Image (tube, rainbow, N blue to C red):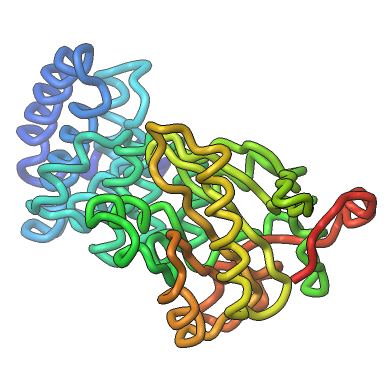
Amino acid sequence: MTRNQECSTAVPQGYEAFLREVKERMSEAQVRAARAVGSELVRLYWRLGKEILKRQESQGWGSQVIERLALDLRAAFPGTQGLSSRNLRSMRDLAREFPDSPIWQQLLPNCPWGHVLVVMNQVKDPEARRWYLERLIQRGWSRNVLSLQIESRLFEREGHAITNFESVLSKQQSDLTREILRDPYAFEFLGLGDAADERAVETALVERMRRFLLELGQGFAFVGSQVHLDVGGESFYLDLLFYHLKLRCYVVVELKSGAFKPEHAGKLNFYLAVVDDRMRHASDQPSIGLILCRERNRVVAEYALRVATNPIGVSQYALTRSLPKELSCSLPPTEALEAQLAGGSCDAD
């Protein structure tokens, strides 16, 4: 017996009435979808999945019924996408994974179906699911960007840098600023080895600025690398300088190839004072500093930042994925194009 013959005869009790109901819902939803395609489609898929799930659990419908339903729906709605047996199973899984709950009511209808599947299949923790759904709505991530953020475990990294923001910024500014920093940063996309120094990391990051900006997060605009400061006749150089469009402030990033040292915070505090004095516009918020280092002692970093008068954060980075489990989402890259920066100027640690 062929699959089509098997599907044409394997009709359980209640199936015909169910098929008519589904057809009516599909027709009604197609009209509404002209006004709100994504939202109505996800609502329809969730409800259809719930009905399939309920019948499988209460009436023992097997997988062959989904095959039959897919054939009949495609015959009734020729040319309509999303009616494969695989997609029907995804609808059923959606109803199982997201039962009636605030997540379903508030978030899922505002997300494209393909994005919903990415979150459902790649994220299992309910809190993390909510977080990724909220962020993709807020930030307009494409499906590929969403997958990249999940793979890099952004949920576990965003807002976890060591900072002194609470003591030097207002409560509102501190909360907003903390959100833009991560710990650690995932920079393994540079393809550099663990032996790379900060000059090589900087060069590779600049060469791959588009990917670097994605890892930094929304709102960062690149200003320059090795930005020269003349202070009292002496030359100093900022490793990387950004402007954050949402926070309306400069962000100075310093790269350190070794462990964090208290003097790193002192030097960056000095740089921020100069940037605020010479670059900051009257309407800008105070400039922010970020020290990216290969490793850091939390206690040492907290003490060092306690005496800093400007807002500074400290985060780790890694050049490869060969990290302890808790750091498997790494940070910045370094090595590859070191020769190109050999002629550049960098002040020492």
